Length: 293
Image (tube, rainbow, N blue to C red; front, side, top):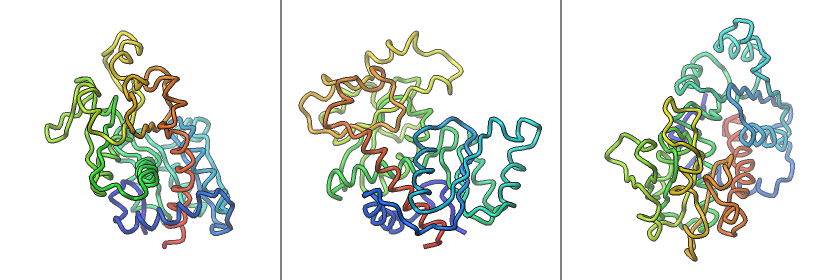
């Protein structure tokens, strides 16, 4: 049984095959490839884009989707999260898509289920389908010529599962990754390329990936306000100038904190393209895992 817990669960060849399917699915035409299959979405943390994209992906493949509202589930009656998943397993789904705050939760389930587990976000460490769609977006933009490209991930990298998964995935395809953040948001890993300000690296990069400042994941107050943070880390027209750089963001975007209003309508901004690509990539992932291809 194959699962998707981290991007390392797929080989490079498997990922490229997923991208081949994703290119076909980009037309957003419906398919019957998963007709009769049942996909369960189980989100223990809030989500709009990821949950919606998985629902859309499954339905476009002809599957039935059950999205459980964990806030009103039996976990509020004392049932453990593990037992909740085991009860869902007993109902015979063909895949379970899970988002959870525990970084290790998904991995602990794989020996107890008989259908694929797909990680839709795990704590601060992993968001594999987001990284897969980010790499797909980069590859499509550069017509597959991604070897040697440089990506700067900017913002609260320490708290970001998106940064964590991209840090793992992008170098496998020859992409050089660096991080730009204030000291309080940096990784405690001296082997990584880390910078204080985007100006230090902007002339060398092909892609800037901005991140949301996840204040809810910090126990300390590092900035008096988001506006104070934005002075140095908001991506603006002045940041990019006339450079030919791709701008990405996993969403949700804090306007004029992560990215300025002006840059959100700039043609170099591919945030909405990421959303569209996310449906296609997740269609390809569901097809692969459910049909065991």
